Image 1 (cartoon, rainbow, N blue to C red):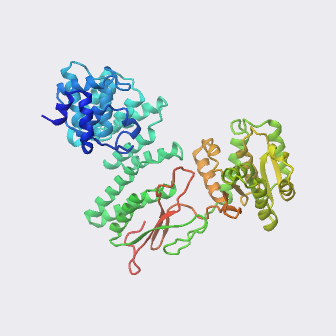
Image 2: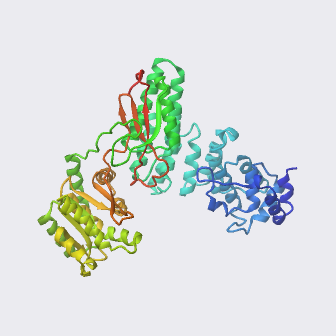
Image 3: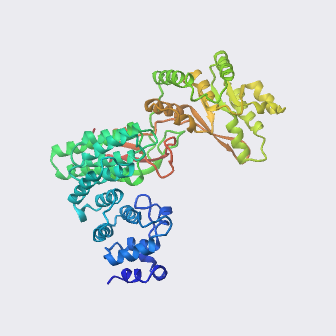
Length: 545
């Protein structure tokens, strides 16, 4: 008999001692990709942790013992015990344990609930070699006979499981059910699963349609890297066939993925970048020089090969489209300026009409806040005055400083200098200053810059039109300078705008591709880490896009 089975019969205290003596058997450090998140693992009774880690099926007697020591732990009850256990099995892909639980429920004459069955479906989806698709489809039919109304969790479980079967198109129908019920929290993940299923079964256009839909949910959503891994697997299959037609197909597939990565500014991990390079080499039957390097936002120069990337262009038509949309949908709307009085807004717009265009709009309050947090002894107004001096006096730029009314109450030489060398506009303490900043810059034309250490997340999140949001982010990348505080001498550190598009750049002998080394946590950020790919000097690309 199994060691863990004997110990289960001895009760919780004995099992706990056994767990302490067998750390290699019981230690599980789940990650969100591999199973339960670590904080959720703490809600699992130690006895169940041991069973899950062991991964072997239990007898009816074992389950009775496990149930008796688990009920009452945290929020586990006799009623929700089967569903709780199956959820843990699904998260950790422990098919043998989950299957033995279903067998035991049948012996107990306790029909499993919908939640238990849907989690079992999901478990089977991760263990297809053990259970076969017939079990998934039979469980799906059983659930449909029990009800025709599904909650979000059940729909998600069934979609993920069905994507592993020949009946994968059923998942698309269930996704539409979710959409009709406005259940969208899990959709990016589900769209990735459907895309993978479509790729594997040859419906490439539908697969990419699902991937694009993920971006339509919002720029903060990204497809799973498994989507691209699956696509590269298909590319490599065509390469291995060796004939000219298959090579052409592999080449077309490769560049289809690369152009998606470029157009949607997807930043792959270094692992995926290596797979991309390997596939590129296999298609072209060469060994490229692929080097991980950096291209800083203010230089455009590859640190590996010295090539200068094309400048980031924000043409006049794009600017006019953005400004028109901003004025029409944002300024005339009620959402952005909801905390601003009509009088203040009217006063500001009149000022901009009379004084614009500006060369630079400074987020004065934001900069003062950054200085006060990082340099307690520094005078924020003095440093703000230094910034104004550099741009207004040294560079002869027309500067607008945005601030709050309380700044005017400070009778200082620095404030007098700011008011003399720039135009200072202050708002009420409760007003939102981001829209004022953006309005003034857009009203000043495509050459105006913004200086701030605020990434304007709040305002970006309020733009619901995805094409407008993408255009707005491009404008921010081109025209926003970032204040990074003060150096050891108390001088302001200012980061220039991004001078090049942070996306795939192709050239005659290879490509430059940005990747995420883990530092990019938000869709508002861009990496400075790139892979520089060059073919050998005496080689030429056999298969180009």
